[in-house]
Image (cartoon, rainbow, N blue to C red; front, side, top):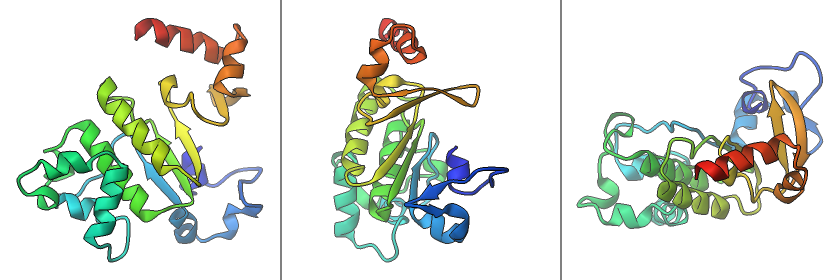
Length: 199
């Protein structure tokens, strides 16, 4: 669905509209400029932390970069490093943990200031502490934006205004966390109870 939204694929039938405008009426460059994606495995360049955060905006200054890092809950970690924002992250961010890479990706997205945010399984491989920092960062970053959260870990989506449960490519249920839990036979309720037991 996220790839359809960004037109990596085009629809065979039907249409996707943003504010009543068919996405096919936008060029791909313009369409993708509206959308910020935080993927499961963020892409980091073999460069400094400042470069990797600032990549989301033309000619960013250090104040912008640091503000985005604070919102993404990564500023304290960066300030504790010897070279701070000039620290090299290595190829694909090899010198950073999964949670640190995700928070840098969130800072980059915050700096690019998109209208639509896609948060794609961004906490799936992380420990609970990293997940909490990233969730806090995400809920701050999404203020005033349309946000699409793709997740199997239901704690990630429980605060969403609308939850869409999909099964084998089809919509199975739609509701809030509370309304879906009220239905004891819902797929959402089933998976929520399983995850609670595992936690």
